[in-house]
Image (cartoon, rainbow over all chains, first blue to last red; front, top):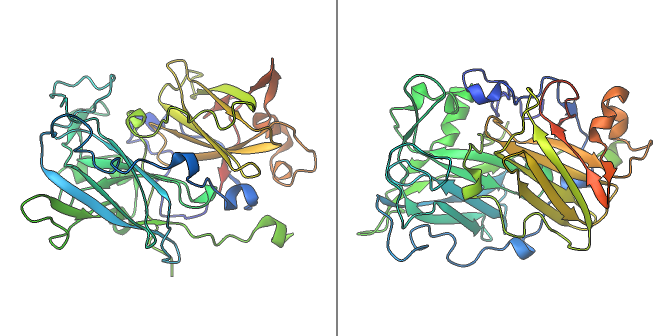
Length: 228
Length: 147
């Protein structure tokens, strides 16, 4: 399997929802063709100027610890991926998602929807302004709690680079107990999911800052047409 | 040296807060309609999945969340095949498959798939459009690719 040792196994029994959803047949190796080497251009997908600021989507400001989350989107060769869509979604400061299926008794925040989008600049940089999400319980096992996290979706520049992941916060005491975080088996690889507090990027008297770089696999596959 | 690739994580059950777009399912209103369901290993619908399709020829990208019966649809320019991503709670990494609208027996990718599983990649004509169910596990499991 490509990128072996990086991505979590689809069959990860400690995360119960994988039981009926992971393929049982081995994945079939797919030499890359034009379908895998290309990907959507922004065009109609381009977000509005304020969509990166999750604290300014309503009349009032959301409750919580105001933060920025910023970093660079890079490929496996360390090159910036520019003009690429970054999408995020998250719980509010109390750990509640503004979703009809989330019923646990923590307060909703009328000033927080929890979704944002932005586009990377010429150096692959992105930045969101948001509030720090709270941890929350889930039904995976007895007394199960998810560490605070922000969901990230990346399109990259090729269909084969598509990645969805979660960004965590440094020093979370729930890390040892979370089967989703620990589904990434190698501790050193798992650490790549943890953002770094950045005093440099804090906005004085306004917001704390977390840094999170994202590395997508490189466009380094031998194309099928050339290989044949 | 292996580059420090960022590992994947599941989209979780609340992906609809961040991923769907109002016009996401329709890349070309005059295109062909492709619809189906996402089913789990018990044959039950997956109501919290997202299906994306990519047609490099027309540069057409579609994205549709499943409904409470696991149904999704896209409307996209007619193409011999589309690349397909499946994202869902319980999937720790996106799954990649392909849907063939006009399967070519000489297609080099289909040729790498065991003959008795190729039909899982072929859409069935259905009215004015096509039907394509995605079975994550078990009998009739869709072929997923290691890209």
